[in-house]
Amino acid sequence: MRLVHISDLHLGYRQFQRLTPAGVNQREADVAGTFRVAVDRIIGLKPHVVIVAGDVFHTARPSNQAILHAFLQFSRLVHALPETEILVVAGNHDSPRSSEIGGILPLLAQIGVRVVDRDAKRLSLAGGELSILAVPDVPGLVRPSFTRDENARYNVLAAHLEIQGMLPASVAAADPAAVSISRDELNTADWDYVALGHYHVYRELAPNAFYCGSIDYTSVNPWGELYEERVGGLSGKGFVERNLATGEHTFHALPVSRPLIDLPPIGAKQLTAAEIDDRIRAAIESVKGGIDDKIVRLMIRDAPRHIARELDHRAIRDYKRRALNFHLDVRRPDILRLHASGAPGRSMDLKDIVTEKLRWRTLDAGLDRDVLIARALAYLDEAQAIGPAPAPLLES
Image (cartoon, rainbow, N blue to C red; front, top):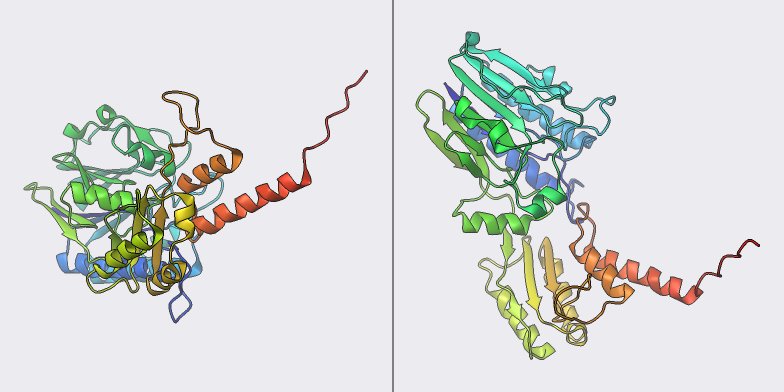
């Protein structure tokens, strides 16, 4: 009994402003292409069961383009693998905030895909040989009993949720799951396999319990994902193939749709603007194959504001034109404190506070952080020009 565990497709994901010749957001097209490749691989494996552990779409109201792509690719799976059971469990991105509003996933049921999108369900497959407890990530979910079916030979838990203490705090805060359970409640020993979705990095919780990760870099912090993958010695994104009878476990890596290049940071302390320009140029030239059409980040540390203003912005604009996205992350040397605790630091004015908050705030895909910060500071200047509001009149 072989199953494929894939998750977090995030079809319809959009980022940056570049469009394909057909007028589709380039990153949306990238993610769609990655899923097409994944479907090709799954068809070649011919598993008995395919589990999609949530977040088929990036939003509960995806674009027509994303819906059509999902329908076509799942139709390919159904027609190419007529003997394979295909199960989709809703994730938090698939689920409307109100339980009274229907989602898009039931559309897939019309082509033979089993969809669990409202309540947890226990499914009996393969003539009763396989039992799957499917747990969607929906608000107000009635918690099922996370126990096995003793009448089935194999028991699988398929769930889109957060295991408490498993995710980095920054990930849990930026993209919270509606359903969160403890590792004890998960009770991995009861299952032949646990197929989890929500966390975008491939991660083992137990020898039989895994987050398979996303198929592409679609989270709010792809650089954090790259770091975790590098530290964990991972080969990137992909999906899991699991043999329930033997325990054989294979992670199938998917090709990267678009390279993400996180260049080594530049320490700018005591450097002139010209010297920093030279180091930026050297970093760009070190990228094998060039930066063209890639997603690139370069961090510059300890760069005072007046030095940052003197950088060669014409060259920087050219880097941004060549790359799909070039993010020059310039950080000042001052230690800014939002709270009056610990060692003394330079006090922050209102502009500092707004800049610092927006520098780290999670933004919707497609929003330019630098433009947002500049606009916020301009509004503050306008408010300051108006002057203070008149004091309220006191009643006698």
